[in-house]
Image 1 (cartoon, rainbow, N blue to C red):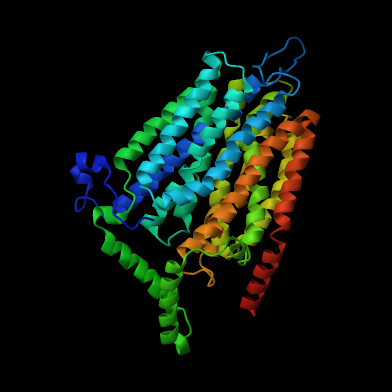
Image 2: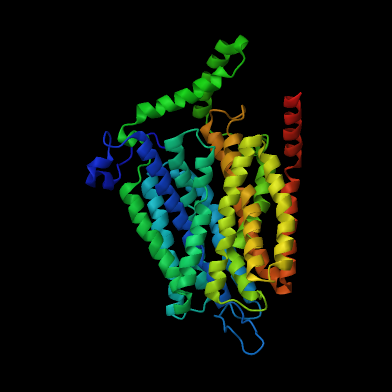
Amino acid sequence: MQSNTQALAPGLNLFPTLKPPHKTLTFHRISALLITFVAYASFHASRKPPSIVKSVLSPEIQSNSTPLDTGWAPFNGPHGTHRLGELDLAFLSSYSIGMYFSGHAGDRLDLRLFLVIGMLGSGILTIIFGLGDWLNVHKLGFFVGVQIVCGLFQSIGWPCVVAVVGNWFGKEKRGLIMGLWNSHTSVGNIVGSVVSSAVLEFGWGWSFVLPGILIIIIGIFVFMFLVVNPEDLGFELLGKEIEMNVEVESNKSMENSEKVESEDAGLLPSEVTDSSGAIGFLEAWRLPGVAPFAFCLFFSKLVAYTFLYWLPFYIRHTAVAGVHLSHKTAGILSTIFDVGGVLGGILAGYISDKIEARAVTSIIFLLLSIPALVLYRVYGSISMYTNIGLMFLSGLLVNGPYSLITTAVAADLGTQSLIKGNSRALATVTAIIDGTGSVGAAIGPLLAGYISTRGWNSVFFMLILAIFLAGLFLIRIVKTEIKSKLNEGK
């Protein structure tokens, strides 16, 4: 994203055989993909502890005989779930606000150093939250303050890893590889859940400290080995060649009668648009497809993040086959939802590539997820097998559209003629979609904290309503895609 060459990662100076000509462009592209995958997975792993320890901090559960939990003030009172929801709101609000500023800062700073700062800051703040257990802290302000600052550091991660991948892969943003790369969120959630649950019996503080240490260690690895730009290794000519090939292939698809004029016209606006600055905020909202997908992501992310922050708590407080599961078992069991999410993201991307209809694919997944959630709520408690199967299915269907919109759909919106060649306009559009989705992510867990006091049926009703509204915003685009397919068939 920066025009100037940045300092080379020190690990490559320590191991010269990692530099060209010993290693090829393909090697370094794969390395960038893997390093950013692990980096962002560690961000999500360090976000998972609050959902795992909710059942420990929360009001006690009454079994047939004695209370199973005593809770942790100030979260163990009658309004304990409200406080937990406010804790989620504090983190996710600062995270969504920070996303806008981090994107702009990433355009101007060394991406490797900026990403490392986000990782180290997130790790330190996660550890500090865990110290509340050992220091016997019971002030709500302490926990809220830590979450607010941690959210700001966490917001650095996504813009940085996306920018690095964009530097190495240019316009190659679709396909199975990117679908697999985008599974870092679910993989991070799984790792965070397993690590936090495994040490929960030794005290809830450890559930924060270990993921905090993990992201710090990975942050040091990123500092040592991440190469931000191909140009830093002397691959600038290959990079330009790749971009040029894309432009040529794009131009070949134009009508032959206007070929020369179209190519000339296509080059000039590209340079003028890049230099003229970003389009206006309201103008970006009016671009085709931006508003519908932004609001769809708002409700999709609301549902996905409610599960992210409340599923272990729900499992702990809902008897499976008449038995309340332990904190550790509930935390580990919740990873099934994320396993389904990995497959759902890849499957949604694959199907949408095959039928070339992103909105149709998204709305199919959304509509199918409604009966899946009803079945999980009604029959998930019958046995462990039904719980696992229905949770997996729910994760697959809920995370499919969320993953699709944040990757392939964003790439599609960048190819429309109105903003083609204007990277700053594309950044504005992406910020609108992701920012709107992040607002939904902040509201969902907060509402769950308040509504859960009325019963979990009310929470599931809220989730189903959100899914219905998400699908509602895509109806016009779905009609357009279907008409387009019908016309192609004639």
